[in-house]
Picture 1 (cartoon, each protein chain N blue to C red):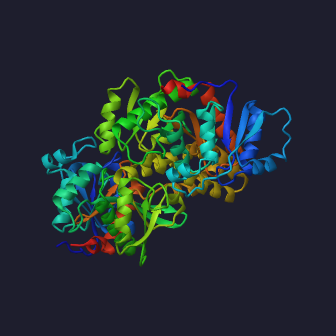
Picture 2 (picture 1 turned 120 degrees about the horizontal axis):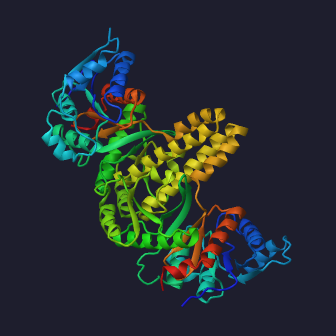
Picture 3 (picture 1 turned 90 degrees about the vertical axis):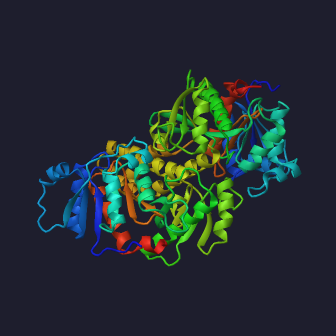
Length: 319
Length: 319
């Protein structure tokens, strides 16, 4: 049984992501200071300490937990975590398991973090496939989209479980009593979609969730549902397309000069999503942050983890 | 054997789409005049004639071909086309079959138009599943994405055929000698993706196409491939998400006043795609235009059809 640790103590993978360790450590220091939480940096002691020396850590609850190995972005996930037991990812996951940390945030290889979580923490009862969720701002408010990449091929039962986990998340984090659950498909009618969505529609319709039916691509930015479930292939294409569009538009805005900058901010809110993806369905709070995370996004992912701990999301999903 | 008809003679479904017949007829009149082609309006004679009376048709090659029935957007496609043999969709398709028109443009129900094309015209040899393609502007130039909705569940062989048809289209319409073919997936590596893309990757790699490997969501607006193949479910989500984002952003731009309008145009070019989707793989030139098409988009879809006729795309795809 995992229990809530008080005060919040977040383990952060100091070596995860393209801008690690510099940006990760900067974000972790700022998070520890601004959120008044305890942060444990997991990574090679000397490397992390050298980086930390440039900060004034007075009054900040920050420590180092050594892990001398690093898992690269292109290593085979399962093989890497089996062979590198002293890697920041495996060591960080073990801190949650041993209840020495209440959550783990990593910008490392998504596959490796997810595999380590499965092997180290295990799945929640009744959840056959843990999934990755991200939250983005639609015109109608925040929407949780899941799965965005943990499960490329899904069964209807998986989508139902994604919906159940997403339901708990939105209840806890956004205090919505009965989140509206939508199924991403190619038409509003229940007869529209592929084999997976047709079968999933039936399962969701007879569940006790507040299932509002199919939603389509255009409903993602417009809003209408609080949770949108899809297979990890489609979800991954959706978030990467949004990221690509945001990047291309910001180039257009920059060329447009001053007027463009403020519009860029306005549209960024619509196109962008939280950099931290929640891995729901494992026995621990795990946030996988974007590989290109800078200090600000690391800090924001630590905040997402903090909220999950405080609202006891993981406990509410099941045993 | 279907042969090219000279001069170009495009049949247009006068009753297809949300703004039919007014906007369709307006667009058709403008196309006939500006492109100097022959246009046949297919629909109830009296309704179409009443609409036409408000235009000066001097020197324009425009005629009416009567079809008294209309297929609604929510009718079951196959049943509707079997029962409504005098509908604008079925009659228009027969005009191609009888070589009384060189192409058919419709803003009607995608399912009904595709089913009528299959049943009336038949499939090209070697094409097991005709597919819908749309072209959009990426930073790297025009990209043909297909399938965007005709086939929700696909096999690897289907994706290979989509690639072959898209290859011909981009060769003919954009004069590219060896179009770059990409497979939409969730990572660059051939080991990334779902079962369909993993198997399709192998097929494409050993084909004689210029296969450049997997492309990801962010590569759609950024560019890099000339043809991107995907299953019709994912493709449909992609184009509807783009449409939704374009709509939401244009609202943001309007609120921003003058500066916003020009930026709206710039971003519209990136987010938007041609309103006309090409139905490739049937024995005839068929363009299915967006249900919300206004006169301008009808005109632009007629232009797409004209180009397909002139460049003999359909003939080049096979017999």
